[in-house]
Image 1 (cartoon, rainbow, N blue to C red):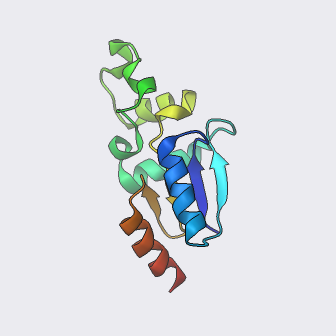
Image 2: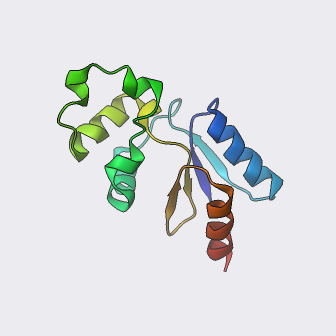
Length: 118
């Protein structure tokens, strides 16, 4: 089963969900702001892609952090920040089974889902 992780009201999430719906791809949706995220799963995403990719530094939640919280970032500190404030997790995260895709690009989704169904 394909799972789409993110936040319900995010514009990029709406684009990803719309793309999946338009291509008749069944998926489960997990809102990690409403339902939290399993720390083991988050650590696995960071292991797969690097915490620098998973951490959404461009969002308002991260930018609003005090400089002291942003200083000396490493994987453990980034995971702790994301666990405390899931809005700092880049979105969407599409879990297609053998891999996860961070962010939304239609061409990347298309290629990944063709590979996953093969």
